Length: 133
Image (tube, rainbow, N blue to C red; front, side, top):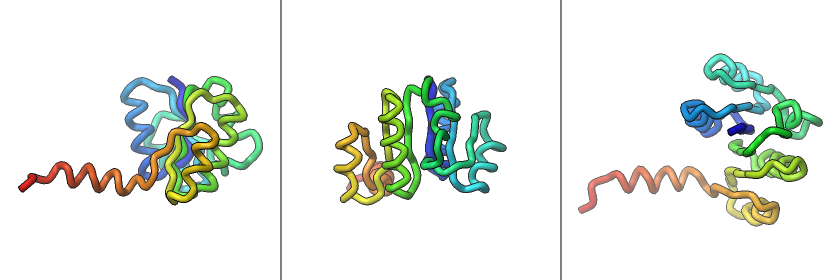
């Protein structure tokens, strides 16, 4: 599977690790030069230091062969832009983190699978691991 991940923060890098362990091809688009450099040094993936809104960056990252586009940034506007551009390029699977619940409907109108408030999902999972009394 060919994946394009937008954002090389903790979530994006963890996703890249999982995908690589399962022999998927990964490209990462990251606006921060430092994060892009770290991802490039740490993983055997294509890394593009660019803002998702820069013309043609999705095409450079392999949008025509992508099976999925996953946006993992803490900026809903960047994530929404990524999803819009992915939809325009007919990427079959679009997944995004949504940081502000009130933005969820915009993503869903595009047909995006969303993860809302990821910190709550993590907290619930951690809590479920505690002994129940």
